[in-house]
Image 1 (cartoon, rainbow, N blue to C red):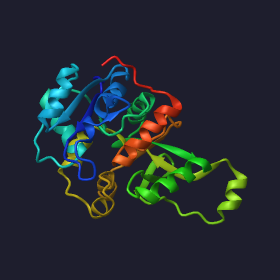
Image 2: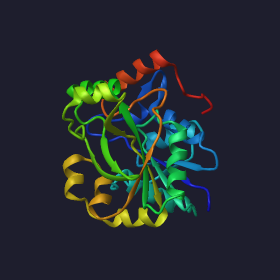
Image 3: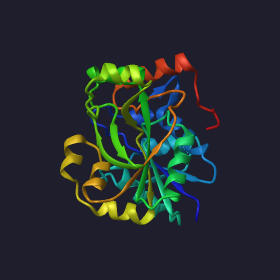
Image 4: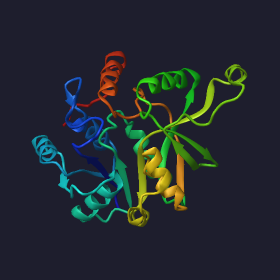
Length: 267
């Protein structure tokens, strides 16, 4: 199998947070932090895919591989395919590592690559089963930023559903808290590994109804019968579901101040 290709889609035109890939977290741009994650994954190539000359210039100034893609591309997965074609890679597995996920654990990237290699699924994505304290934190954060953080339901290693709501709803929660340190809620980590052919198929599909409702492109795959391997991983040292708003950026800096900075500083 050829080396996997990690594509980092990055665009400036976020509705909720314009220019966020270049927003700094403790003095380092969000994009550089995400690229640093990809750089640490052994035996994998990586490239930033963007439609912004500002992001292109930022990457070039730090010698980060970057390709320009069409501004008409709407989703990260479509941009990943465009990058794959542009760099003329023969990779069998393509990882979509969103540019707003700077605290992704490199081990999680390797886990989805390995998980897809060892299964017959079309796509692989990681998740963390939350303990009760982490669930309480997620619930509180959603009071201010309800569309930050995604949860999923899985069965037998396959994802059944994803939502921006916290799923499943829990009856008799007090008894469950007393019985186990872990809640039944799984937080999705927005990271995907696609088989090359599955990525090509996925990007030909129209936006699906629930994808549009939730704003979650992985629902397009499920609504069209594609299989997603759900890979359970350990919580990262700094746990953040992705940075969607300026408030998330503030929280990210608070986490770095509390737990230390995982940026390696090599870029």
